[in-house]
Amino acid sequence: MEVQFGPNAHDEPNMLYRLQRKIKVFDTSDALPNRGYNLVASASKYGAVFVGTPDGKLAVYHLKELVDKECEPNHLPVQLQEKPTHIAVNSDHELLAVTGGQLFMLFKVVDLLNQNVSPSMSVQFDVSPSTFVSDVKWNPCIPDTIAYAFYDGSIIVCQAGQGQVKKLQSSARCLCWSPKGKQLVVGNSDGTICQYKPDLSMMKSFPAPNLFQNAPVEVLAIYWISTFQFAVVYKNATDNSKPAVTIVNTPKGGQPSCLNYEDVCYSMGSNRPWYYYLQGLAQWNVILCSSSNSMEIATLGTTDGVSWLQWCQSDEARPELPLTDKKQENYPIGITIDTAAIHQLPWGENETLPYMPTLHVLSQTGLLTVFNVINLNKQAPQICSPVTFVG
Image (cartoon, rainbow, N blue to C red; front, side, top):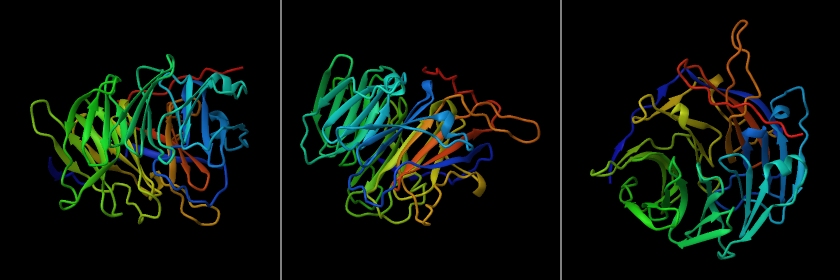
């Protein structure tokens, strides 16, 4: 696959981030040994935010309390059967998946908000006890369908509503559904990318790019942008050097190509196992990027839907995790974008911004940081929706 360097970073004054709140959810200095945690999720429809804790609990928050600086947020603690590694809310915001080890638990969001803490479904996956989950993604259009990648290469697709589980042994590291939910793209430990149907029959395969002077590569994270375009994070498989964030183009009838933007988060060493989070805001043509070894969240954006730039912010408008009270650096173990229309920001003199999304970032020390994501572009669509409150 042909590789070229991506364009230089670009100052984008219309895309800003504002620190709203930081809350200590749990307190630990223990290192998390696996790669690929995601322990924060939001159900924007109900204004609910969920945080998994390393000691085996789930904390249920209300967004309206999280963003109110005058309020000490209450939360419902839920004891789980296993220590969670991933939590994820489905596309219609009705279901919360919690995974730890081999156990998949499914909760109804409304049940949790009504303090009914029993899972509606539990499944023990048929995978090796020595492996762990490396990625989880709900289908964006089929609300009961979820896909898992395990570090031993297993792929599992579960249809929760029908109790059906499909499994494929491959070399998977990460995965993502297509925007319409009709296919699944998988990034592999050998650097290849494969597209599958939901029944896990293979459709296409693309070779690994030569990013690190002929060294073998593996895929850390992948985000399906459009039919022939993906954001892909690759790592040198032979050492702990910084990963490369890329845009991979796979034109119909043409040769795939790769634009290398390098490590857009400016990671600091490799203190923790490498992982990257890619969170898309498709309506704004934006991808948020977060590295397991960086306090800074980066933004990729496009104005034409094809050519991507790294959008940079000034110091006061940059999304950066704060230091702990002990002046330790915080690194992410989960990020999620929340589109609940709950909080409006004052802006300038006698002006209030339209409802803007919030970005929740959970750190390895248990700090939940809430940012306002601000788009000052007048043509940007409104993407926040009113909240349905549960009595």
